[in-house]
Length: 184
Image (cartoon, rainbow, N blue to C red; front, side, top):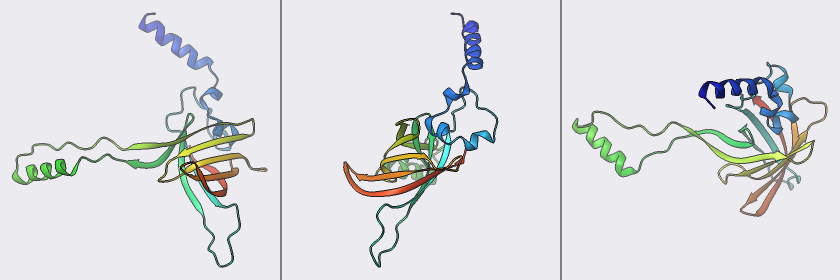
């Protein structure tokens, strides 16, 4: 196929494919935010949605014990879950010291900067059935475990569920969790 025909075929496909194919399961289950904006294009999943979660322990605290909470944010794109904090890879200590010495002595004409900030992938999610989603988190620094969520009654965009926190394969705590989209 010639390049011009490929471009034409791509444009026709983009016009014909419904926008629902571009939306992940979370967006289908909690469509409230999307109804406030224009319909998505077929390839409009570049930035994804940022979700806020808040959780409390499933078991009530013992007398005199403080109530723990678990809260934070994550971003979904396609079927992937990303940590929203940016990470920059740093060079080894020896390379930094060598660069500093070159700058001090006036020999350095330019400095190589680290690569642009990246977001760390911390999990993925998929549909369990028409009303529930499973979010698998695998980041020991933030969330590590399995979250199962469903649409909260009488709401458009709030999801309610459980989070089973793990250390390795061992379950360490169970939480009641609520998530909601905060940015699209």
